[in-house]
Image (cartoon, rainbow, N blue to C red):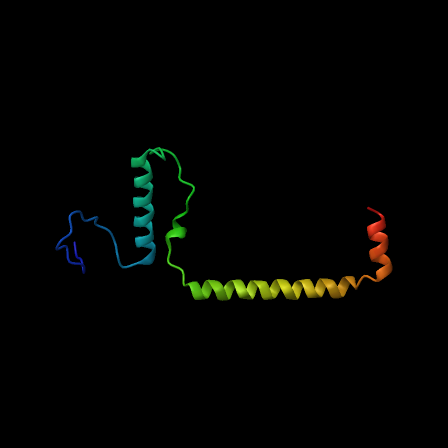
Length: 100
């Protein structure tokens, strides 16, 4: 077994692949699940509804940029719908309120 990490001052080592984001995420997922089992909050044969990909590192700036693009697309789509549907005139608004 090869490691790049020093084991000096380490009480318990868990042998695992630490060179890939997905491998590290999987180990954190397994450890979190084991902690829940030890606390009695989850049974060993019970499925955990938390997905492994929640433990992946995501760049916050990319997430914000993606959300910004999604909002811009929604605004554009809403603008197109408004143009297709036309504007209400005052008479239509009054009729709509009288109907309630």
